[in-house]
Image 1 (tube, rainbow, N blue to C red):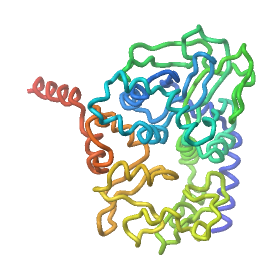
Image 2 (image 1 turned 90 degrees about the vertical axis):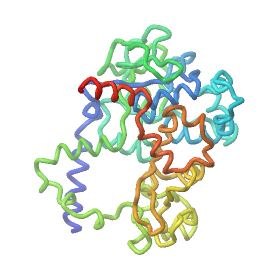
Image 3 (image 1 turned 60 degrees about the vertical axis):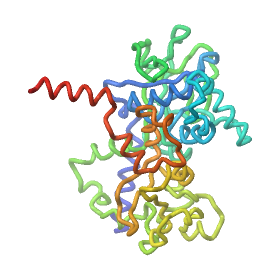
Image 4 (image 1 turned 45 degrees about the vertical axis):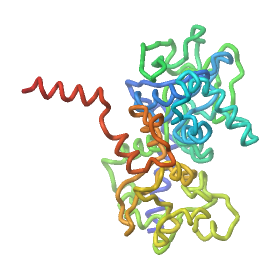
Length: 374
């Protein structure tokens, strides 16, 4: 097993070093960009309607990308302005005073830390560097940026960007020149580009899942080339399991913590694979897994979420019923749910059901299509 693992590791490393981020960019691609002066409410709806969970942030005054707004940020935002969301006395205009820039500043003031710097990769970077950038930064996504001719003032530089209205709908496509291959030394793995003559062009927003998909496509025809792929998941030193299956199996020192929410903690509990947040799991038999019941409130789920991409939803016997992912916060934009309910009373089961239900427009269209078919 050790020899097969070493052989697989060597082949994977060789593949990642020889292939570049260009291979992650789809032939037909749409990217969504948020101006930092956009109201948070509009960004929330934009993510829902455009079917994305994250988008880069563009600062028009500085003519540069300054960060990425993702699902985790929306969770933080609901906790910052949460009491106002379901307040009927709060007008839409008052809500729209909470712009992305204002909320980022408020969050920075509360934490005492500056907003995180933009971490990006370039299309010519190896997949190995892309993976390390994401893992070491504990990032869900990173923009792929190239550098070329500055776009006209007021136009967001991307290969295909949608301008969004106040409800997150797309009004028109904005096209910019210079899509790929025009690199003159730009923002790279967190480094800011200072040249006034080279503006970043957003080509794509990538993640580790895309790197893995690229790897699987390459070796799919020759599975024997990667003996590791033939082993069951339970045989691998990865993931977080219930205590009687070994608890946290990764190395706390590996980049990104290997998915361990307590990575870097010095406590003996973290070292033994028992999460310091273990008391938040409703069933002791599932420790150190963090779990939710269907009746858990969304507000409580958000408190447990840090360090986790998703949480299992289980019944009283510990049987898996569903999964509540961090990205599911976007579903609260469906039919303005966040304006109609209190997150401290709205349950995880209700949130998942509401997000998956068709919108009134979609339901009306389906009914009309069915009537026409008859």
